Length: 87
Image 1 (tube, rainbow, N blue to C red):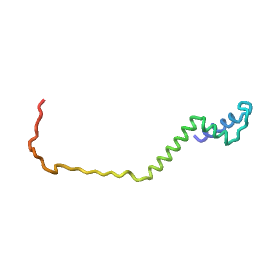
Image 2 (cartoon, rainbow, N blue to C red):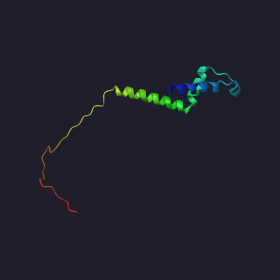
Image 3 (cartoon, rainbow, N blue to C red):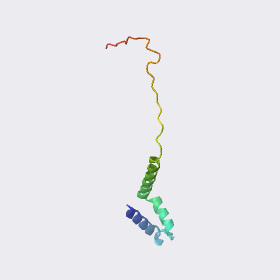
């Protein structure tokens, strides 16, 4: 995967540093910035890296606390008969 990223950066540098096409010469840093901003594959790869970093941070955190309670027949049942419904 890293070879593909480096190859895209290299060809992006060649593409954006072409003097005849753009009329200006770009530095390597400028070419990398343009390549990273224009390449959808590299933006997706950056998002996947951010996702992995977030998952790593989240895995080290404590889980959210859970509290619960249950009440059953505290005041008694006034009607001891259950009414049945016939359909």
